Image (cartoon, rainbow, N blue to C red; front, side):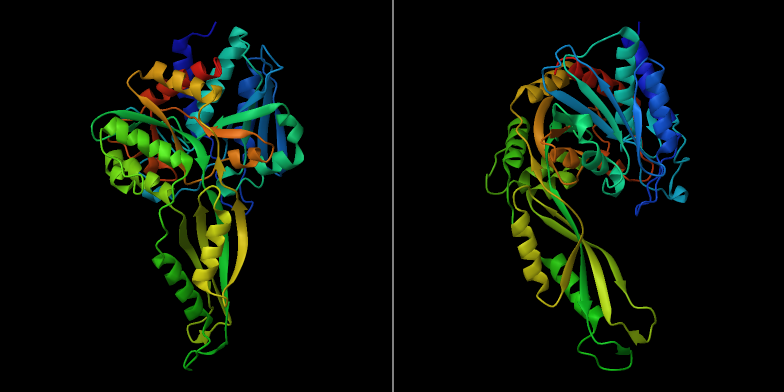
Length: 435
């Protein structure tokens, strides 16, 4: 029989082993999850749990396993992670980015936070179930997706479009980015649980002008036109707009921090959140950031066209408003085309699943305060939402107060605290066995 001590040791070992299998996603279809998917399948098979690899393209592998629950009449729960990681520049790191070593109480390596730590928690728990013959209260679909870091085209989006039957009977899901501790200035701890995601619209702005020699005066310079459009977007001050989830989050911050709250301006409360303030600031409004510029081929040639890429993130329920505003900012002479797009999500945080999350977190930290939050990024929950599945971010971690956790996502020297991972696997196990 697997004990809690064995569970704790195994989650550390699995996290290290997953990190040591590079599964880098370079985007534009250039990625490969085959080796890490094979590891997952073998890990599950070792304890008698059957799983299947679904290959959306050569090397692009998704792993699915279904664990029957005691009450299969109840709607099932999808517990999912992604197997790919973003690229690294090894010269910037102080360690081998794929070492998986424990240094200063942390497991180091690409994916430690995003999101092989959570993958390890899921695997360690279901392996314990397999060894002990444990049956969860309801059906659990365990999913490890490909390609999340490049828009999920070969991962969850492909699975939902081509194999929706694998998620039949499921109405809820949990995955990354939520359940981590945030220490306020007064020392109190919040545990933000993601119940909402911003929508995203990656778009290309294109200006078309008059090509010619660089020595000429040119009032139809495409580079100048697209530069002006980008400058206008960067200068635009998006108004504060608060969703239901954002209001609940900042009301809780004010209560726990014992600070006054202005319901028309939550920004003063950002000061209570430490390094988490940057992430939470982006939840108060739409954002649109220029990320790429493309123009020209020679110093003395004015190109006929120029373009820029914008990473737009809009609040749930305000997609049309966001897009209309951007179109008005850049004007009619700039063509806007969509690169990729996903809807905003906002789910209730007052039902049985949220109660189970809260109970599990408070079991691990009786002094903490769980609270729903809106995330500025997106997860594979966006894909599952097309099947009517409500998705939450619940990858619990107890973090050191001075750790800038959000900077570790896609960051240099990515690492996860060993103690935090042990806390997380126990909390996640409690949740899954009582949800």
